[in-house]
Structures are given as C-alpha cells and as structure tokens.
Length: 296
Image (cartoon, rainbow, N blue to C red):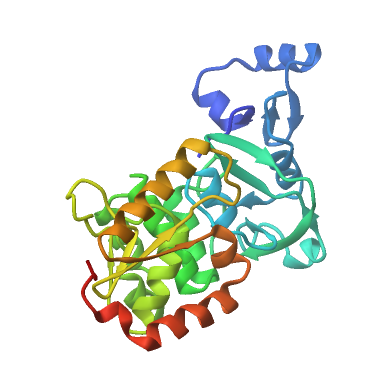
C-alpha cells in the first residue's frame, strides 16, 4: 500500500524519474532522504518514525491504514524481515501509532511499545511502506485472538477490500486451529462491535441471526438473538451525529412497539468493559426470554 508523501527510490526509478531531478528536489528542500525512502511534507510523522526504525506497520496498524474497522489495541504492530534486522536492536523501542480514520491517516500522540511480527522472509515483499492486505491479515490471524482477527477479515469483506475467494486463499495458509473458526467469517457485519458480540454468542451456541430483516422488510437489525431479542451495536467510540442518534431511537421504538426486546450496546461496553458486559448478557440469556416470539 502506497502512502502519500513516501516514495521508495526503486519506485521513482521505475516511474522514470531522473536522478538529477531527485537531486534538485533534495537541494531545494522539496523532499528529504531517509534511504531508501524519499519523503515530502505530506508524509505522516508516525510513518516516518517507523521507517527510521527500519520497520513497517502491519496487523492492526496496517489494517487500519488499509481502511478496515479496527478495535482498540495496545502497542504498535510492526513488521520486518527476520534476517534484515536483529530483534535485539528493537528491544524496548517505542513508536507513535499510525491509524487510518475516515479516509485520512492520523498519528496518535502517545508512543507505544512495538509488537514485532517476524515472518521467515529474507527481504521486503514490496517497495511500499505498508504491506499488502493479504500479508497484514495473515500477520493479524497469527498474532491476535481469533475473534479479534475475525473483526478485521469481516471488515475487509464488508468494505470490499477483499473478496471471499481472496479471504479463503489467506485462510488456507493458516494453521488448522486458526483456519477452522475463521471459516465462518461473513461479509455483512457492519462494524467490529457487531462481529465481536455475534462471535461470542456463536461460540456459546446461542441462536443469533445477523442482519435480520425488520418486520417492515426494509431495514435490518444488527443481531436478532433467538426470536425476539434485538441487539443493536454502536460502531463509533464517540457519538456526535444528532441525525444518527435520532434514527437509532426511532428504530428502537419501532421494534419495541412490535414486541421485540431491544438492547443497544455502546463501543465502550464492548471494548472497554467487555467482561462486565458479557456477564450481563449471560444473565439475560439464561432467562430464556429471547426464545419466545415477539409479544404484540
């Protein structure tokens, strides 16, 4: 994946940029050199910091830059060929995390520890500062809990960054213990919050239907548990859109009027207080009311 403001010297050569032109850019300050990279003022500071360490973002960080929905995670996940740089050189290194958000690249303000990924490669797989999505997802599947890597795969499918055939090709390279549960990834999950809640319910064998139709046949519920319990999953950490807020409440009222029980889970409940949230969801499920038909 290419990043605006960051160009590999080989890429410039392939594109036919004369070395004399590059030297002129360097003299007038249009670009700076961080071999083998040339950088402009548009280069994200976080990316520059990683390249200075000789690493490139992958896993959660790489997935975010590829435009996927990513859950919160400590550390900055980075990649380097195993034989290119000794791991001891990076022990204790910290870096500013880089994230993609709403189509823009942002650099977070607090340094975090590096989480090193080390595939058995002798050289970089490409001249881009961010690995291709298939390698990013492979790293994620080998690094993260299965439910977390499922968030990335389902986001890639839903946002059409990946086809089902391409996803299956990646899964085929993974160990069976990872490949088997990930084989049930879907393309209709609209957020990682929804994936996380559904994945947990499926793992406990509770009946859950994702993206079930409203009685009006036009809209969809995030999750229908059993026959009558609707769980709506907020996808954003912060809610500042009054129109979305109003639409959410209208949806809830419509469903409640037709006999459904509606629970709306926030991003914070799923990713910051998940253990407590699971206990409360279990308390509701054990009553078995979700198995009854909607009461009208």
